[in-house]
Length: 107
Image (cartoon, rainbow, N blue to C red; front, side, top):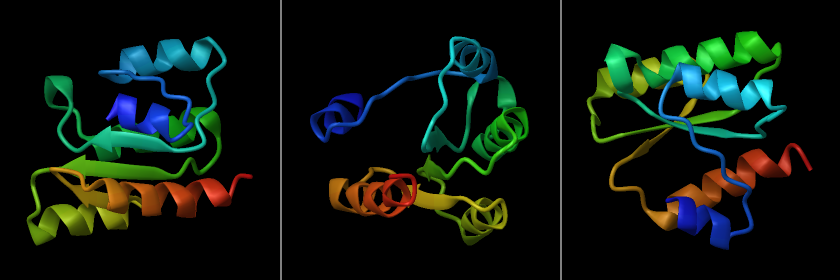
């Protein structure tokens, strides 16, 4: 996904967990959009990471949760957290549409 996003002109930073995300923030990173997996390391959920990120930055960073878990309860939890949902495998056209929608808001 990194190479696809880079080809589209996105600046990509990756973090595998909250600690790596915190390190990026300490380096001055301010994301315009976060793409997060639903199930993260150590039992953390992508929705929890996004809540932490928004609190830490004090702003409603747009987010997209990506998961192979397409159960209606999972999708409902993601949407209740104010996040978009994409199912795995991610279709490039669907990802591009979400990027265009979210990133047009910050330009």
